[in-house]
Image 1: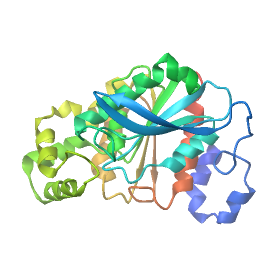
Image 2: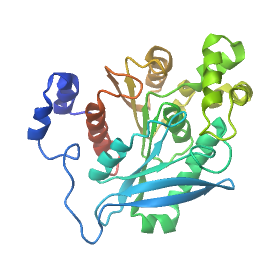
Image 3: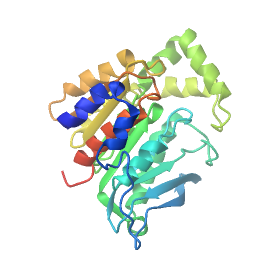
Length: 304
């Protein structure tokens, strides 16, 4: 859980001068780790096969022999905000951080579909657990976690609910695709705007507004509704963070009802946080990073 000191920083951070950060203790938020000449921090470019396609990605390897806990980052729709500042901070804290693109996204082979998000995430997790990757990338297979943002937040909750061996699931401003499905079935101005946006996303191969609508209408609701994922998330530590000024995935519609549903599951271990910012946490990246570092350090790095 967040410590009292961290909570005070999160609550009062907007009142602090930037100079305060320069005088705080040397934490992964503001300081690099000691150098390890034998096992230095590094970046490794990756090509991960998934369902006959090649997914581009990279992993930030933490310094030290390890094995290291590892976080897989899941981007949103289409993936402009990649949260690589969070990935770098987690590496400074001793985590490996892996980022990849789903099929059809940003040069990845194949076509982009909603169903591919969880499929590709499961493929990446299986790939990481192979003995070759465990050795080469210094991975602790008992400490794998997901961190997703927006549509990636949906994907983290969905894929996380299907993988009993995951340690942690972190969902930032998670979308609830059940509401997208409702829009696709009912029509209306909001879904027309989503379709028009999908038509503009040339970096998502094979996607357009009509295909997105058709997939949402034909996908069973239980696969899209994040409120229903609680049973599969039991046994993991789950962190959900929202921005209370988020207009892309409004908390009142896509965050608060999901939190209430998860709290009704007595076996669920859930932490939540709201920050006074937008969908991308644009003005509070340090506060967001500190919250994630503190929580992940407690729940995702060592044996439960």
